[in-house]
Image (cartoon, rainbow, N blue to C red; front, side, top):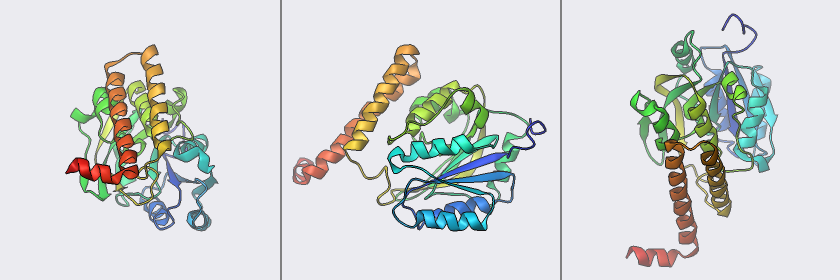
Length: 278
């Protein structure tokens, strides 16, 4: 496979940034400093209103393997990631949020060795959560079954997997655009359609949780609408291909919708919320 695709990079690392000027350089440098150099770095700015785009441009002029593109803010992270997928040439795709970073300069070399001469559709990655909570999540045979990963995974994030690019293209696995929680459908489709996987049982990403003003920590009615749209799409999938996994994920998304509605209710009527707790 490697001999046949000598012109292609091993990894395309797709980084998405929106109003994270104080973090984006760390994310890019964590990829640029990798000892494994058979990579391309694709950075998409989703119409930031701060200096995020300026920092990306500055780094793209300094490091020639950085491909810098801009997306429409209205497309959200899903649209930005689709742009990255459209231009990626790597055999494997690694997604990285612009406020996160790779664990150390050797991690992509280690990931390359984990893949070896095999061609798995997915590699499940370990990661460390930092910020408002601390946790280390390491994949193993028990938590990498289809049922667990499609329906019971506590962190169904797109960046906690490394994806074979041809697998995504052949199965038309794309992100919904202009929608929060775009990972849900992408990950479900990817996990269920994958025929093979490997496990990277070490920390690949450092994920920053609870960052103020991040898209997923600020709940609005748009978040509710997008959760409902995900549910509608999942129900369509259930109609055409009923599985035990999709039943589990639909119930989970319904519960998430309720929790997000509670957050909005508590923000509108905080005194009632305090009285209820009392």
